[in-house]
Structure formats: structure tokens, C-alpha cells
Length: 283
Length: 244
Image (cartoon, rainbow over all chains, first blue to last red; front, top):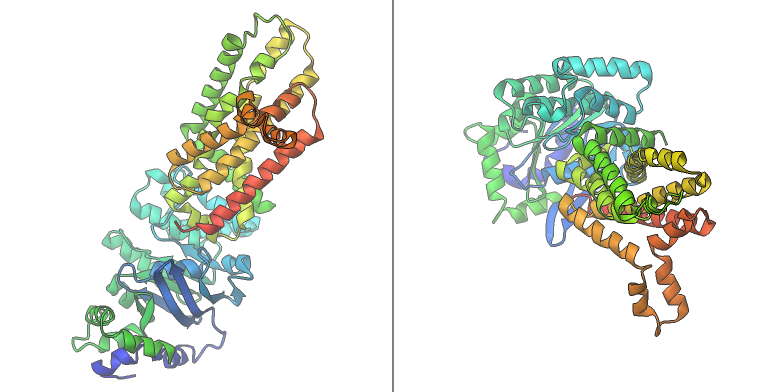
């Protein structure tokens, strides 16, 4: 996989196959997320432009890109909040279009900004989620205890969510996403706005869970990718520009730093390199 | 069904978690009482019925129900919880119906709390309690109609004030279509059938006939269809502009 910085850009879209082969070599459980030719158009604006990729068990996928690159839109389509203009999404073998409830049942999702009902207490909010997720009485108790312990929420259980600090609100959002112990976790900017300690906690939480789940996180914090992901997709203007391990990506820059690669790829993408990226995507 | 019930419970108790429930119920009771006693002449009429009380319900609902319905979806949109709700394993219909029923049940609670006036009229005289029950049912159905309209408007915007104003205007139209001044616009030139059709759209026409104590299947159908159509419209609007 060693490649010079000059070939890196042109080959960006083509690395998917070989990389997947590497990562799933010891695991034939199949593809947990399959995305084919996903496209979202808002009038004239093409927010997501014909994206295809798979995610296999054991992968922690970092979704990188500048603001407005289409990260959140892609995640909203994977979780079934938005319907794509074209293309398809399958999660755990269920097509989002034809079997949305089955697909949603096997996913946990933390939307951007971790929205929750502000007037509810932490406990009643989590119990509401448990009921909606259809957890049976004994599982419910065990799972509630588990997420409350894992996210250290026991001190604020009876507190109304709107009175919580940003860090706690984020943790409530994560607890909500983890409650039914989903196979697939989709986290949209899980550490945004947290202080360094909280960021560290969330990252070690993600690392703990990465063994038995597939996790997709979007972020624009590059150190995060280094810390938790074993695969990174860089996306800008709705297209995949690179798909590789963070280590290989970093090796593309002479400096060996991920931010340099990120900057080169995403800034070059706008005026001149589009034909190259486009060629790669359709190859 | 289970999901609808879970959503219903969450939504219903959320009214009581904020001052909204208290403010709404107190204002509803105060106004309903004041209108019946002062404008309706509850005592002066010297009749043992609740007509002066129920006659003002359409006008009371015109401003109070939109205040209840405006938050139904606009708030979910504003706070982003719509994204959470729609990515949980629930169908759009379960969400629309669960939330709507919660608002309707809440309006029902406010209505039930007017029971002292029923006790009063029974203490003072010997009213036809069957007719009073019918009027309560009619009033509850009318609240449901207003709420269904409000649910759709609330789904179309993230701004609760806009939702409130548009709901008031639309509900006003539905009330007025039975009024002589509106019907007068059609009278004389339009065929009788059209005048009847416009008149039959009115909340007032149907509410008036129920509150006389006659529960006609046609009036029940009218409210049933009205609610169904507006909830369907709510679902369509949500599906169309989920992300905005």
C-alpha cells in the first residue's frame, strides 16, 4: 500500500477494494453497512454525489471532511432520516427503503448536537427510549444499568435534561444510542464541544466498544481519527476523495501528518482535481 | 400500537413537565366560566341547561387549541428531536397519531375539569344530562378537529408563532363557513348544493346539532373524516420536508 504523494490523489477512490480485503480478511461475517451509489440532491445543490462503500464488522470508520462536505447528509441517509435521491443503503442486511424498521432496530444513532427532549429527566428519557426500542423487562433493567454506569450518569438521573451541561447532554445522547446494544453505531460528531477530558472519555468508550460493533463516526477533528478509527474516508463536495487506514493516509504526506494530507486532498479537490477524483469514483 | 402508546405517554406527560399544562388549564377554565356567566347569562336565563357554556367553546378553542397544537411538530423540528424520533424504530404514522392523541387527551382533561359547572346546573335545577353529555362529546370532537388542523400546520414550520397564527386563521375559516355572512356570499347565485356544502364544512353547524343533544352519525363522520384528512396531511407534510 506504499504510494508516493503524487499517485495518492488519482488513486483515492480506488483503494476501497484492497483496503476492505485487508480489514475483513479474518472476518467473513459480511458487510454490515452497504452503500451503493448514494446521492442526495437539494434542488440545484448536489449534497452527496454517488457515494458507494461498505463497512465490515470490526471497523471503526472515521468520516472526515470540511464543514458542508456531505458527512451529516450521508449519515442521515444511513440512519433513515432522509431518503436518498438515488442509490440504496443496507444495514445489517436490511434495506432502508423496504425494511426501515428492521434496519433502524439494529442501529444506534447520535444525531449532530445530541438532541433530546429538554423537559424530561434523564431517567424518564432513557426509559422512553428503552420502551420504544421494545426491550423486555429484565433486559431493560440490565441495559439501563449498563449505560448509566458506562456514561457515569447516575448523579444526574433525576435531573431535567435542559439543566444539564453540554458534556452531560452529549453523554445522555450517547446513552440513548447505546441503550439497545446495537450492532451498528452511527455517531455524528460525538465529541464536538466537549472539553479535553470528556473527549478522552468518549474516545475510550468508543475504543471499548469497537471490538464487537461497527462504528461510524463523523468528525473534523483529525486527532480523533488517529485515536479511535481503523479506517478513514475523506469526503468533500459530496464525493469520496480517499478511503484508507489513518496510518496509510498520513504516510501520503511528506510530513507524515494527517492534517497535511487532509488539507492537500480537500483543498485540491475544489478546482482542478475534480476530474481525477471523478474518474476514480467511476472506475 | 405499543409504540403509539409509548409516544402518547411521553408526549402527554411532557405537557405536565412544563408550565404549559397549568397555564392552559387555568386560562381555559377561567375563560369558559367567565364567558358562560357574564356573556352567556347563565343565571339570568333561568334555564337549567349548559347552552350558555357550550356556545362559547368554538371561540375559546379558536385561540386556545392553536396554542396547544403549535408545539406538536414545530418544537421537534426546532430542537432537532425530530431526527431522533424518526430514526427510532417507529413509523411516521405511529408518531403522528401518538402525538396527536396526547394533545387531544390533554384537551380532554381540560374539558373534564369544567365539571363544577355541571354540578352547579344540577344543583340549581333539573337539566337534561343526556344532552349535556352529548354537548361534551361534541365539544371534545370539535377540539379534536382544531387540533388535527393545528398538527398539520405545526408540521410545516419550525416556528411556533407562525404555526399559531396560521392555525388560528385556518380554524377561523372552518368556523365561519357556517355563518350567514359567509353563506350570504354564495346565496342567490350559487346552486343550493354549493351553499349547503360550504355550510356543512363548518364546525359550528355540526357542533350546534350535537350540542342540542342529537348525536347524528353524519356529524360524527364529519369530525372523523376531518381529523383523518388533516392527520394524513400532517404525515405527508412531514415526509416531504423532514429535514428543513
